[in-house]
Image (tube, rainbow, N blue to C red; front, top):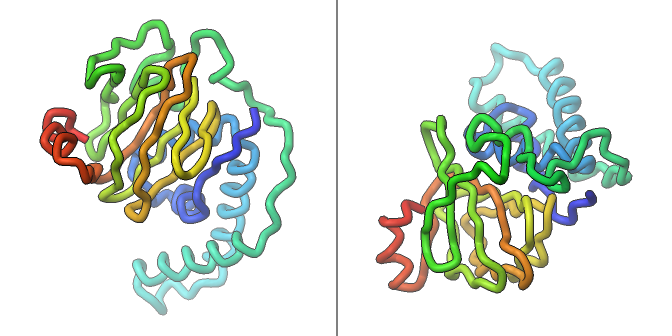
Length: 224
């Protein structure tokens, strides 16, 4: 598997620093299982962060200022790095197995695609909300082939990992292994490709924003 859409550098740095909400971490970890490119970025961010911390004067600046400075320095150094060469992943590709969900999802959705208990959300759209998370939103979506989702933007971060099927929007084509790392500046309308349902796992740290009045009216019902 060779994903074409990766984690944003700021997400990589926050993941390495342990500064992401748990729901975002779960989806990021799912992506990292099969993306050698992003694993190399995380490893490098952890290495850079360790070196920078060694050169900090802990008593000289407040903790929040120190973290902000470390984050900026790590991002700067990551930006200057050449993209790592594509390397074969030593890990298995759970997306290509017949029935096994990716390991980071097991505590929240179980281990098996066949055992998933989908709930109707809208025509052609079914979802499962994660068990055991306390903040934000973590859910799995199954969207029928050839379906258009409502146009929406984001109140905060949305991180979506494609597990099966595919969709396209203004940002490109997203297939199994790809991750959509979106913020409040992005407005899009995913459209699933014909042939097979698109299954993805999404984490939100703030509600979506819908420009259409119908979707806005239904948003409290869907809790998105």
